[in-house]
Image 1 (cartoon, rainbow over the protein chains, first blue to last red):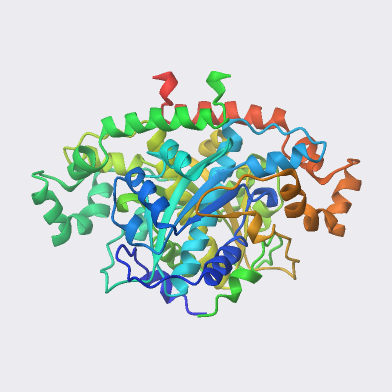
Image 2 (cartoon, rainbow over the protein chains, first blue to last red):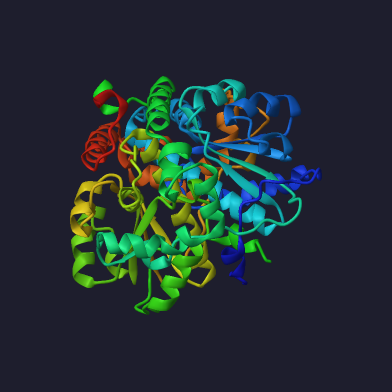
Length: 252
Length: 252
């Protein structure tokens, strides 16, 4: 099998009008369900939204990123203990999964499932885009999608047939990310070496200028992922996870 | 490209003595780094442990599951804001990532990266096994691997060349996991239908008998994932995540 696809893949944000055959979408999700899952519990669900009106309701939850409306399907991947708990209750078994560790387990299950779907969809000629807004506005998304307790949206992927070409963005050098045997913490010089190519790219220099900053890192800290936003969305998501039924240890 | 692999894949827990060429391991991790990542921040790191003595130290952290010693490599995937924060600090940028939302972002980045690696490794003829013990004993793993603040182990994958054949375990029917447009909550009959095939399998009936239970769900609630264990490991992991520098909203 050709693994060159993995080196060539890229995020696709622009889609043609072509619909995805329902049978293909279902088969791809079924294949993705073969991804690893904790104790074979499959603590996830996927909501496939193709209806225009429901996409319109989802759109503001994702800060109106245009992919939500232009993609053939918006797939919301959820950490889901609801089905498993209902199965326990129907089987004279007493579940104890309303806690942080179980939330993490279901989150990892959902993420692994989502990424497996992403790969399968791309290998079938589709283009995908992860929306990082899912954990920001989980409560609003849950309302639109009628998510019951113990179901928390974790990842959204928009999917459709690509419209035109997209360039591939850079990555850090592999030695900047991989550690042999144990973690070797970074010196200031290591950090410079790891990031020098990234910082030297014209496209990234452009982001610095456009945002009136002096370094690329400032584009992240001051514009894209600010401390204030991170803290606002931390509190919002934390409360929502508890509202859905997963209690954090301090609040028991 | 043949996507049949995705339907056929299975977890491999038994490995031959054959080593994985270091260059192949590096190339596979490099390809996996092309997986989607939030804002191209790559908030992850991977520690590749092949040294026998360090594997021996990791082994009890994973409750002495034999894969840790028998696999050619034990790869610990971490949610990692350490490198990104050091880059910010070296770039006159003030990071604000010591919070729950940032922890979730890095966790998802690490999980997506891990799963992409899993797929690439399997496509290269290797066998892999996720160890769910990573978030149970994150603190002990961090100690063995010398993880600095802002680095939290999330997923461990053991990887090696397979020794012999392994059967594929069952999955739920796709319609039990996928929802169209919005979530349609499960009736008791739905739950029975979704789980009937799983419960009827001889291998699963065997688990019920072996564990002196009356239903398969009880094997999960009373033996494999008990309320007491989930709560113990919730508290332990929660405290460790905070110790590494990610503060949950209530504790600010």
